[in-house]
Length: 310
Image 1 (cartoon, helix red, strand yellow):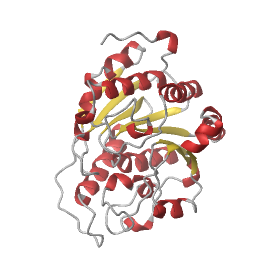
Image 2: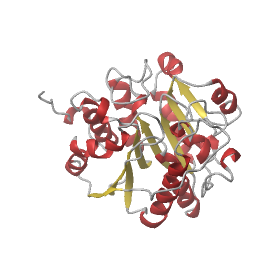
Image 3: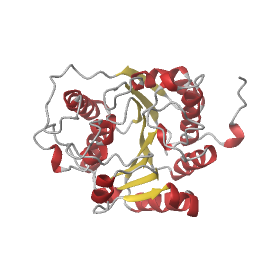
């Protein structure tokens, strides 16, 4: 990872699920010291504040459980336009969410920029869920379960929301930490080239080897690597501030090891943090943990970590 400036973009989207609170995520990460930490690590930091999608008319769908589809469409348009106009190679964009719907907005635009530069966009999806529902298959209607399906250009979205500016190849996606997959998702995802490492595989074989294999693929392709960090990737015992907790997640040291390996690779070109719900936190412990993990991603070593007083 080259020493570039970092662009912080707050995206307080909060309509992908039914439990409110993710809209407070960007400011909670700022309060926990994200900008100051990055500055101390030697980066120039520009925080542009929070992006807000314009008000949108509701879009109806044949699946009556789907809600806030109009807001989803507006969010995609806003983030896509922002990335096209404001994201360039002079900085590393860090999107502070917001629920995981935000990925549907910026990932296709990042992929389009990579294509224009003659390279490939890769995505490391750190999540308890595959987020591989379609508009037809979701039985909750929660759109934060659909962004991966959207960014690969699944035809189920055609004619409903604007299509991705550049779909991401399924073989360029690696998922880690998966431990909650609906049957419909499992059946569809088995037909793709997505590289999945669930918690059973991580428990048996560890997390470093499969991560390094994926990084080697990115390096051989001279590709760009986006890291998408959903808070529920982490075990709820260390990160309670998420509305979609699933027991048995990645522990503290495994999470830091992932970030340290990613930093060593020098390949990460963008990052998002999704599903942080400060309303569910315990004295800010999840927000502070995320800031610590981002510090590891951007170069802080274990020996540089300071003890916090409580």
